[in-house]
Structure formats: C-alpha cells, structure tokens
Length: 592
Image (cartoon, rainbow, N blue to C red):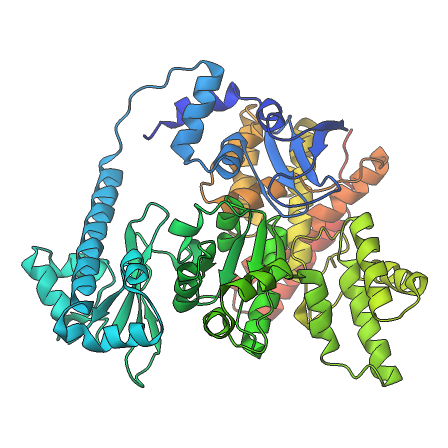
C-alpha cells in the first residue's frame, strides 16, 4: 500500500514520538528532551535521546535515528506502509484504499518473475543431482558425509554441462532477459546468454520465507573460483541475507551460531545444531547484525581456527557489539572448522565447546597476547598498554572494572595499576590501528578530532542544530551570510535546503525533513544532523561567537569548493576567497 504525502503528514502530526517510543523505551525527561537506554544496542548508560520539538530520535552510541515511522520500522521490523497503518490505527485515522503505482506494480511483477525462474532452476539442479549425470556431485556430498534427508532439506543440487539450465528454463517459457535478471547466466551481445553455473554442486540460498533468492556453487575439481555465488539481483542482496537463517530462526536455544560457509552450516544442522547460519561469500556486515538482532542477542562465532578465521571473528565482534549483541567464540582447535571437528569428536564434544565459548573481549585480548613475548619486559609492557587501551573502550563502568580485575588476575598484574592505565587511556583518542585494529564501533566517543573533512561535517551539523533549536533568532542572524548550497553535497545540503524553506514558510517540522529519506542509514544521518550536542551553558555572547565561528568555517569551505569548481586561475581564486573571508571575519553575528 502506498499513501500520498499529505496523508503521511497527517499521521505524523497525530503521532507524538515521545508517546510512541515511550511504549518501548523507559524515557526520562532531560532538558528539553528525553533520554533512555537504546533499544537497538546493548548499553547501561543512556545515550538514546528523543526530541519532542523536532519529533526525532537519535542514539549517540550506535547512531540509530529517524522519525516516528522509522522507529516502528526498525523496532518492530515493519515496512514503511505497515508503520503508517499502525500509527494511523493508533491515532484513529482512517486510511484511504490506494493502489500501488504502476511503477511499483511493475517492480513487483519483475520480482515475482525472478523468483519463479529461481524456483524452477532450483528444481532442475535438485533433480539433476539425483540423475546419472549428477553422479560427480552426489559422490562429493556422500564423501562429505551428508545424508539424503539433509541434502533434501537444503535442496542441494548439481549444475552439469554448459547451458543445460538455460535450455531447461527457455523450454519453461522464460525469456533471455528474465533468466539474466535472475543472475543465472552471463550475457553479451555476440554470444547471447550462457550458464553462470556448470560443473558445480549447488546450494540454493533461501530467504526467511523459504523462497529461493540465489545460489552458491562449488566447483568440482581444481577450477576457479572454488565457490561462485549469484550476483546481486532485484531479490538477492548478499549483505542482507544469511545462509540457513530460514531454519535457524526457528531455534529455541536462545542463541545462534555464526560460521563461515555452506558446508559448515549443513554439517551443523545435520548434527542437530539447527541454530547455525553463515554469511554469503562476504565479510560479516552491520546489515547481518541487524537481521540477527531480530532473533537473538547472543551469537556464538565458530569461524575457522586459522589466521583468516581469527581476523574474520575480530571484524565481526565490534559489529555485533554495536547492534547490541553479545558474542562468544567457539574454539575448534586442533581442528580447522566445525565440519572437521564434528567428524572427529562428535556432537557431544561440540556442544561442550559451545557451552565453554569464550567471551569475545577475552578472545580479543588473547589474540593481542600472541604478538608479544611476555617474558620480555618491554614486550610485556607494550602488551599491557594495548590491553589497557582496549579495556578503555568498554563504556559501562561496572563492566569495565569487572573485565579489568579479571584480566589483571589472569596476567598477574596489580589491578589498581591496570585500572589507572585504563582510565588514562580513556582520556586519549585511540589510534584506530592499535590493538590489532580491534575497535568497538558501538562505543560513544565525544573526543573526535575536529579537523579535516570530519571537522567540517561536525561544524555543519552543529550549525543546523543551532538553527533548528532556535529558528526565529538564529536563522534570521545567519541568513545574510549563508545558504543551503554552502553545505556539503548530499544529505547535509538537502537537510539545510528543506530546513531553510520550512523556516521561511513558518512551517518548521524537523520530523518531516528526516522523513524525506527512506533508507535507514540516511535517516540515521539526518536525525544526527538535527540532534548534535550543543553546550547549553553558554552565555548569549558566547553563543554569538560560536555561531560566527561556525558560519565562517562552513562558508570558507564552501568558497573553496565553489572556486575549484568554477575557476581555473588559482591566483584569482585566492584573491576572491580572501576578500570574501576578510569581509565575513569582520562581522559579529548578533542574536539580539
């Protein structure tokens, strides 16, 4: 269902964000807004704010943010239309019955057709594996120890000779463009279409509704690449899907197991560990973490025990932390992967490894230790300093102290000395390359350097927050000196333009500005723009000076950008910039 803008705005106006968020989050009044514990990541110190005057929410910890619609979409996993309907019902607003646009109808027809192509292709591969021509594939699976029922459950198949699936699908009435849109072929003008998958055992990839959305194929023999996945299509995005989740989501164990590949997932399911999932030929992403958060807040990582697997685990830990998911590491040594482990030691021993999985922070520290000879005083000191820096990133004080005491005991250090080192590290902006690149992306950090591009973005955000907090006075004061085009291209400039337009019309509604963006990441950025921390203790004179400094910073960068775009003569450019800036720096913006 698709609704016009005036209907959406009516629903927004009748949906107070404090009331809506307050149903899910315990909010406390803080200044002109409200604060609470973020529902989108695990925290013990409130960093989640709701601003009623702007009808937005924003978390300074994990970056979540948006308007009243996006809150319901993210919290209750709703589509935009579902969120509109939920809020309309809540407000007693009757929504009109509106048909989808022709464009959206066409898009849905395309997706339905692609799904049909993929379903028939899966049927072909499935039957081919069980035919005489699929003997190589069947021998491979049997050699790997898979039973007929698990092969059937996962829909495993076989792609044999060139263009077999093309011929089959054409006989079913599909066009070349439809088969290509499903990602099953390579296409060019001279040679037409030809099968993407051949001489490979096939792993159908399913969404949580058990619909086939793509394939993974492992080559038989020594060909390259060893594993080949479907390209991204209108129905398949490898960053937003997890292999085996359609079955794992039904698990009632309270946790899920994340591993590396198709065979790991299948072997674990066959052994009774139906809570196993894997990413699809890509590194673990924030999207993967958000999907997993819908089903659990406890992930056990069982990546390969080699160096690549360790690096993959270290990358995944902060991503999971940022999403509010606790992670533990299942150790597989002396075996490389879950498949090898279970074949060698069996199901019960693997369950013991799950039960004794190591807390991720301890795992990170133990990985750090591997690079240092603790019998050498200098090496030991370097390790202890890195450990202190890692511990300093733990936001909650009680949790930080507990980890500090435990690690001090493990490494026979004085706990008071380690605590002092940790607190000293909290006063310094850590080098992202330190601690082996280990970094918790969910940690709130107010000590970022305000130089370079990041400094400009912060200045622009502060300026827009300044204006939206006190539009009558501040906008009138800065209007003679700055305009929307002075802001960085993209979301920042769009927000500035819409803000200025609404203030001019005396119709300021920050929530509707955030609502202009439909992509979750864009909404988070827009919400952050209008909820940047301002020092509320400034005097009026200090506010005027801060405002003047912000305008000069933004205008200076805008002049540089415009000059580079429009003028080739560097001398003329420098003279023009200097004149404008000299004039501007003589101005003191007044808020009287």
